[in-house]
Image (cartoon, rainbow, N blue to C red; front, top):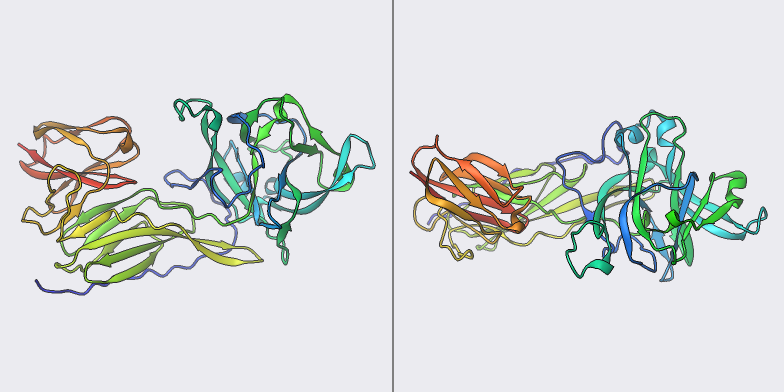
Length: 447
């Protein structure tokens, strides 16, 4: 077979370090990281009780703080993650032209000074740093509240697991990096006043009143209010979470990606959009020893021309940029598993025989390692039903001709998908299921 050399156009992108304005951090159609208390880039409370996750109404105090204890000598607190949202949309908080909005919700880090001179029931705090949306270089993710005490049964049952919207505020005071030792406090300042389109909902895990609260509250973050912090010990003040110190930089894996088409000398790879400003690394390795990594800001890449005598594997990862007045750094997510493969050396892992994408021999075969499914009937006349397991939920189902052209596509939202094939010419087609585990293709005959 003749040998051809691989090349592709490398897309050059410019990443802005300015804060996001006149935009939304949480946009429909994007896939965001999901953080759990097993991750290392947040600091978590020293004790995790049994709790019920959900939305909670707080006491009217403008300032709320949660206590955290440093287990090591020191930690650097880059910011505060808060499980909250504005029910009218975060664009009202991100608008840096509207000072009245973006200064009314702030992330805080504070230290306790000791007993208050005002009252034996209060303590004094000092403000270490604070930041509003306008300077926070904010990012959106999901935080999964998991009640590990109730995992004997269905872990997805109501009241056991809850994905809460989470906004990350990064401190941006010039020439100040917040390094904490011993005990410190992070929290928020909230003052909605009579502002329209400002309705903050906060999330957390509510636990038993028999366990002490770690929440302090006051009415401001300056003047006498710094000597008026009171331990909040009402039944509604037993909250696990809500605010978390950020002690590392997050860059999760790419969860949803698939092979759109493969024609022998080219392949088109696609994935869902993630948070704004993220770049993607696409690594192509070949059985001939080739190893090339491409950087792109797009969510699709065409790999062409490919050699007709080489077996290829593709993996992806995110490239995340963090920049404030004090640092400018890039971190990388984990590479996806090598479960997108194409080329001449086909290895059937589905147990159902090979899926020929070209109609001619073994050349041009896409390897399948993902979630399997069943076509019924096959051959089909009029319509075909695709029967899908639970692992397929959220995946993408496509019907393609043998040249790789997409005829129809569906999002998997249930155990079966009905595909109308009545208008299709008779012949062979491919039905492909793309999930986070990879791609599975089955040949469909239309009569």
